[in-house]
Image 1 (cartoon, rainbow, N blue to C red):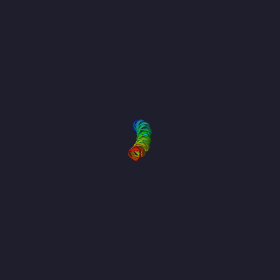
Image 2: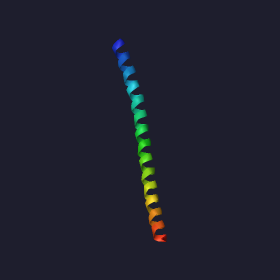
Image 3: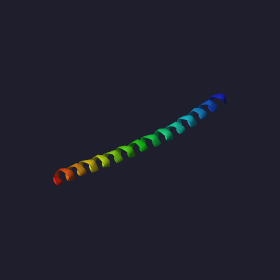
Image 4: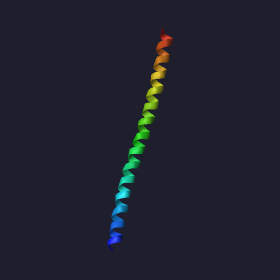
Length: 53
């Protein structure tokens, strides 16, 4: 009984942490996407600026 309870608690703990990690990773992925879009926008802006000169 004690073993099962400890195992169940550990499993719950792991599940909670894995969901948290998954959220963090997806958030990180979104940040990278945004950064990529920003870099593209900056590159286009520079191109536009230099063309204006």
